[in-house]
Length: 145
Image (cartoon, rainbow, N blue to C red; front, top):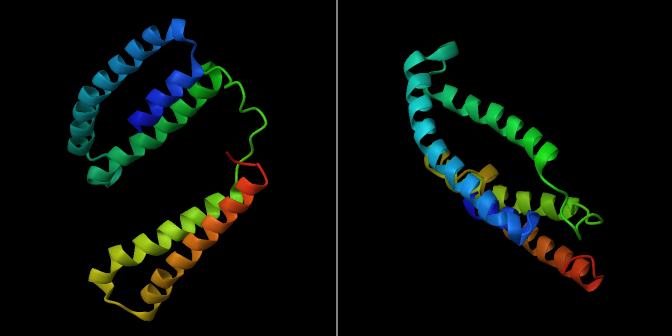
């Protein structure tokens, strides 16, 4: 996520503001790495809601929602991307291709190679090829560069 944060920062702010923004980003990353360890230890030790170490992951939901709201409120619009649309079929095909590859590879040790996992695994190259064909189609139409 850090490369995306730096890339987004470069694209969203003019060169005259970037040094200030990058300084704030570096300070936030440094503070977050220290505060995350401390807060994680406190939450695991407190065992809130009887969840043990899983409480730490609930914090990510709250932080993510807060950062989403802050991004909507404070980040300037990105020029040149106002008319771009989400490639829903491309996203679905990419998720299917990766999930149908990774889920069986993660579950085979605990469940063994059963027909469910083999069917799912065999769907991965099919959906990956469908994704490539779809993206090439969009590229020929000039929808993606």
